[in-house]
Amino acid sequence: MRFSLAGIAVAALLTTQSVLVSALDLNPDDPKSVFAVAKVLSDNIMEMYTGNKSGGDFPGRFPAPYYWWESGAVMGALIDYWAYTGDAGNNPAVTQALIHQAGDDRNYEPTNVTRELGNDDQSFWALSAMTAAERKYPDPPTDQPQWLALAQAVFVRQTPRWEPEFCNGGMRWQVVQFNAGYNYKNTVSNGLYFQIGARLARFTGNETYAKYAERAYDWLVEVGFVNSEYKVFDGGHIEKGCLDTSYNQWSYNAGIILAGCATMYNYSTPGAEQEKWRQRTEGLMKALDVFFIWGAKDVMYEVACERDNKCNRDQRSFRAYLARFMALTVQMAPFTQDYIMPKLRTTAIAAAKQCDGGDNGRTCGMRWTVPTCDGSFEVGILGQTLSALEVVQSTLILSAPAPVTAKSGGTSKGDLNAGMTGLNYTGLRDLSKDPITTGEKVGAAFLTLLVGGVLGGFAWFMVTDRV
Image (tube, rainbow, N blue to C red):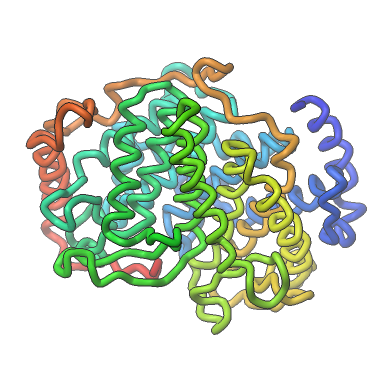
């Protein structure tokens, strides 16, 4: 299917400039229209990117005020863009970014982001690497870090950060103790860990990843961040036993957990185990209604901040990940198609209409529930442009090749020792036989002390506006 899509894509790209105005009037039934709009949006994003320009930022980084994690998220979107359209124009920059930001130890803990490292930040980069492995994105040279190994490295790095002594499990939001949010355990950090584990299990066939993933999901339920109605909340503080739940419902949290459950459904053997994950996937899917009930039917909005026009820079990108993970869910659990696809298609049409603003006539606004660009560019446009790209290209998911595994055409090489550098830790083990070990706790403590030693001379706190 890639070749037929690529042929249509070439035709669409050759005419993009001549149809620039009409291209944003999206027709999701016409692949040429989708390709043309996605091309405009990906070009908008790359115009903001300075990591591949002389005198610009480090490879892989968008300029301030955008954070490192969002740069990693963009790379995942651009990999999907290539997979869906066949347009490889961004690939050199994406490959350079994923390799450079892996850092010297090949674990997405580069020294230039030590002071802002959160578990969720690191995981967004790992998900981009995982997507590269699953989409058969071109492999790096053999002397460079490999996509699968990078995702494995992050999973191994994060496993020792699990803390049963606080809130009976879960990871903290932040890795570095000086950062605001170090005392907070949240859904995004633990949910991304869950999803990475599920996708590693599916790709490699290694059941141990699945067990770690399920432990994370079970903890999210036990602590109340995913409730009995499958509503997904934000997090809680360790000094309160994580019982002071923030009941904000962010779209990306719901999407992260949904796609993780759908992947576990896809991975599981038919029977009781698979049915368990089917029920969870279906419950989470139906709970997405909260993000589609305001303004216009079946048009996505950010319920926790959009009505009051209070979405900050980070939050303006959250719908990108809900759209991405809804599309992935359709591939992992096809029974979700009839619910998900009408919402993606309707939202994509609305999102494209928001992208006709600014001096260039193609800058994206924020509110998809209104018919024309709302002009809300004041806090930065990367997030809302990324959100538009993700939902537009997600309408192609039914014709996109399914993510591969090691047994179904995957070529990316793994490394079970990836991520072990500097950890006093023996690696992943079978959770059915042995609960969390002292070695895992020591590994986490070692990392905290190591980072603390690097930063000990500084009297500052990292303040973030993510939540």
